[in-house]
Amino acid sequence: MEAPILPQEILDEITDCVAIGDPETLKGLSLTSNNHFLDRARSHLFGTLHIFTDIPPKTLTILEENPTLFKYVRNIDIKFDFVSPEHVDLQTTLSRVVDHLTGLHKLNLTCHFYLEGTPWREFSPVSQVLIAKLIAYPISHLSLAGFLDFPNQLLPPFHDLLRLEVGAFTSFSPTDAEYDGELTWRLKFLLYASSGHDGIPLLSFPCMRPAYSTLVIIDLHLENMEQHVDAWAFLQEIGELGDTALEIINLLYTQPLDSRHNVSECFYESIRAGRTLPSFPSLRYLGIDHTAHRHTETFGALSLGSPFLPYFPSSVLTKTALPLLEVLNFNFLTIWHGGVFTSTQLVTLRLGEEDYPGWDQLDLVLSDKCTLPRLQAARLLTMHKYHKNRSGPSLEEGKTLKEVCRKQRAENPPPLPKAGACVPLVDIGLEDTCSLFDKAARNVLRTSYLST
Image (tube, rainbow, N blue to C red; front, side, top):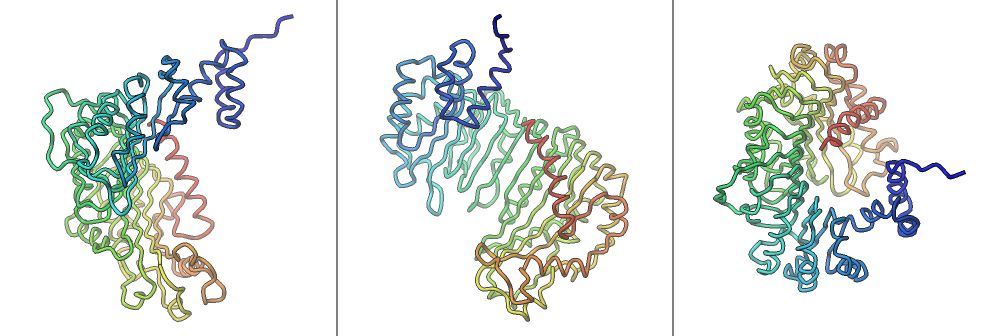
């Protein structure tokens, strides 16, 4: 009696599981049956090429001796050396493969940087041509990090780009390039996490505008007033379209240690300017985080209060209809560098926002079923913690700084009676609500991220 023949979908699933759980066995599996396992196994064996100075010689030899295998290369991860962005070995390797990548899907370009990115002009002409060739492929995912004044004329030709990630120390050439063709970007995911630059000119590039109606996830990291203003202008332009696909907005405000910028000024600016979030009909998650790094030695000279809570959320959400919003996350974190606090400082350490009135207004905003009819979970949290190795016992009854904050919050919870009655989960930093909120947020984020 012949053994039953499994559907190819099942055999592909077996191959995928082996590739994830036991990659070393994958080569042997691919040799057991040309018909059943070989093609799927090759998609894993050659699916991603990591190029720092060279591809492993054996892999490169196999590809060159069997050019048809290049079709399995879907992802390329290239890391240029910041000391020598014209690295000869890397150029030689790229030259041997760049014209054969007919199946290229994802491109990750990183220039190793020390304190800042590498200017485009410092790349050799050969490297510039090779990068341009790679970007000219119909890729759907592009990630850039460590490139200064990257020529934006390389960007408009994208017709299939769905995901764009702009990493640390990356900027684009200062003037918009002339482009006569049709601008057909249809981005679903945009991550901007560059640092060290004023403003985000990328958001106003002509090639970005066709993507306004297709973006599902926007993740912007902001560290100065110019970036803050550009980000909110960008959201306003998208909102003016009316019908958008936007489901996730993440804004992460960061104030590095010893930064010349006071990021809290961004929240004052929003309140003064009357900035409000547009009414996005598909938005399911809104997250706005502020992380500030400070020296413990400056504790006595600082005002720990912030307009972030409760004024900022009240200001940006007032009269904003978000019919599908399920999760709202406003999180203010201060990370303290240096020594631990003294007992006296811990006694006087407050969560900050209780210095401000205005919780009654925020309570009304969160409990308004006309504007937020599907809100399931809201986090309104101010927290302090020590940097890295400073998370050990503090000087108050052996409690950690995190526990001190939770104790204060439990004793003096913000007054949100209406929101507490209308919203199933309101997380103010207590231990039992934190994990529940994290789970609710993950459930919403997972479905949207999978769609991109």
